[in-house]
Image (cartoon, rainbow, N blue to C red; front, side, top):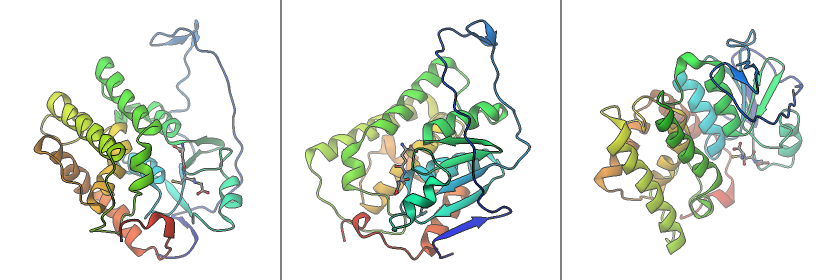
Length: 264
Ligand SMILES: N[C@@H](CCC(=O)N[C@@H](CS)C(=O)NCC(=O)O)C(=O)O
């Protein structure tokens, strides 16, 4: 599948409207927020969700939202925008107020940024159990997701995701090995405390697995050896049918973004 932009399944790209809301949330229990009824949103939207993504070979954030929806078994259309072209910004701007992909459209509602998408999907499809059921375990899962979202700058800089590349070698300065060691510690800790036999970080597939999946691909591309305590995890991620589907599509893309081609 080549070409700059495509829509998969039904539907063409349409303009979006965004429902912006700001609210200071002070207290909540299971059913209320600040004493008002808590509205979890329309549980099943009348329109099929649409996910706007970038190149499958390179776009880690796109992979995270895409994998979350696919592993959850939620039917959605996808719309791909080729990154790193003179038209990319304008094409993304048609969908994303933040100017980045991924973007999730749920009918008229537009959700941008990976963590916001994950929270929204988990909230609107509660039966998919995309966060761990136990509140303390859920807090742990949220912590490592937030850490992934805001940290690991050396890993991103030095080891860009490049799904179809194998056998790449990059220098490993201390700051990069610190990032790698921290990921190993996160996976090992989850394995010891939460994984059980499933191989996913928290037993069942969760938002956390979608957040760490691109790291698995980075370690594969750059040949990072893992201790046994963390080595279980890449196997689980790579044997996911959804992940295999993503990798096959990345393989078929013809675009090359030179600055992402490290370690040749
Ligand atoms: N914090 C954002 C980051 C998203 C992001 O940086 N996406 C990249 C692609 S992986 C992007 O859209 N870049 C804009 C561009 O390449 O023009 C999120 O989590 O969604």
